[in-house]
Length: 99
Image (cartoon, rainbow, N blue to C red; front, side, top):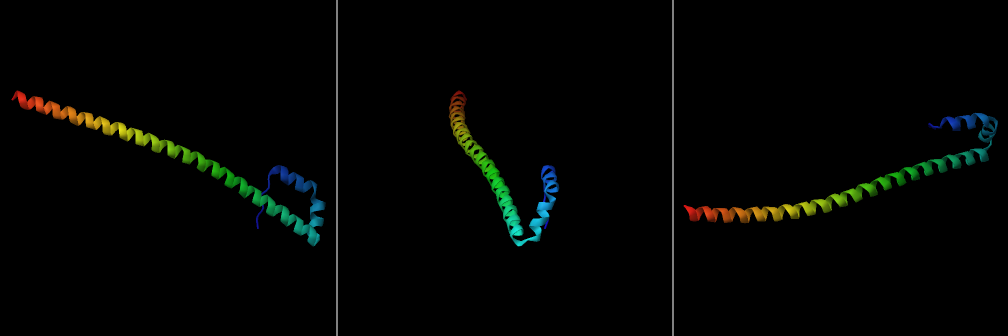
């Protein structure tokens, strides 16, 4: 098992070394330490999940906005294509009459 600690936590551990060693020598202390470590791990995971959820919400919002923009662009291009088609038909008709 590997435990990562920050420099501040390491200083605190060194400062409270005797108390920590006493905890490791009695079962109750070990259980308390284990609960604290589990709680810390769960809190870190919770923070990570909350961050990921926030990122996913932003991504989803961007995706919805992109989808709406794509729909508007498609509608615009379809209308433009229709206008071009009508103009081409009209020009062909004019050229057909001139010949």
